Amino acid sequence: MFEPATPQERRRYYREEWNVRDLPDFIREDIHMREFGFDHHGRGPNDRYRVFSDERRLSVFMKARFPFAAYSSVAFYRDPGRRKGWQRSELIFDVDAKDLPVRSCNCGGVCEECLSQALELVLMMVDTLRGDLGLDDIHVIYSGRGYHIRVLDPEVMEMESEVRAEILRYTAGAREPRREFGDSTGTYELEHFTIPVGYHRVFTERARHLFLHMGGDEEIDGVTKRTVKEIVKNRDLIRDGEWGVFKRRIGPRVYPRLVKGVSKINMRMVDAKVTIDLKRILRLPTSLHSKVSMICMEVKNPETFDPLDSAVPGFVYERK
Image 1: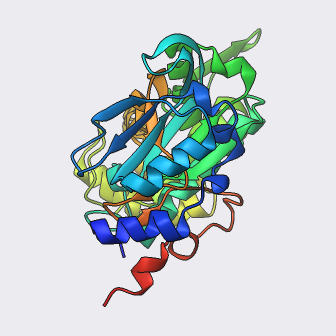
Image 2: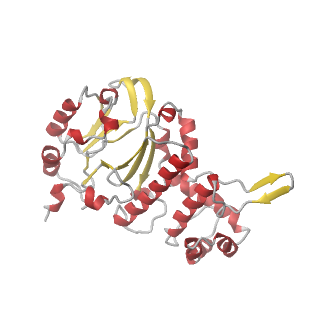
Image 3: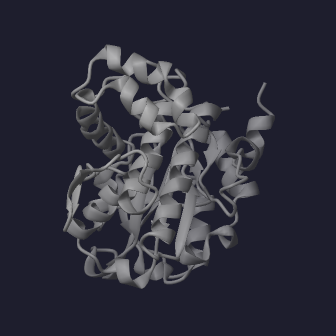
């Protein structure tokens, strides 16, 4: 598992296992408005600007060419073959397990542990998108080495890159929380890791996820390696919700720098370039990720999804 697929295995997958009818509805609908791209030799998607007027034509192509990788655009165009006449684009978040800046494993690639960590982050982000931003048409896709969140609510599909970047910063917990609030009686310092509402709740969740997966050798801007080890040493307090005690253990002078450093790491947990790129192409759900021999697929129930059970093509089980 997680080994590259041979051309023979790719051919077998697309001719015996793959079925165009398994494409998610959000891909099948208006398929003629999307650009398709392909990588035939494992060197990147250099076969671009492909257009398929219907599912049957896509099926014929995939079975005949059994590509190394297949992609479709997040954008809809009047003329997708030339990427002209842009209409709208999905809002995308890309969480790649192999690129997580903080991982509880040392696999060097992808494994069950870091994939589980990536999915945990994705579930928190989906909860924020639904609960805080009121979005509903959200699809989680297992990409082979991580996850894509694809949002198709009409109100976000026409947003410009700048607005998408702001949504990303909020959803990822990558915006440093304000340290103070004021009213008629004065100004008070906020306990970032204890406020259970609004953005402070989002930031707290992401910080908790980060601290609980640290190994102790990570680098956080503005804090020393000694502080990082103190975080790991005291993270049972975080697990138990004792954020006030945790803050005192870290120290009031270090704490503001830690908040700033956490926000920067949170931003690196998601590939920002994917979110702001209105003309991005993403792996086509149902296609084979040939570098790791896993199926890119829509996750119907993220709470119970196990890629090592659901996303493994048949040919993997027959390898010696």
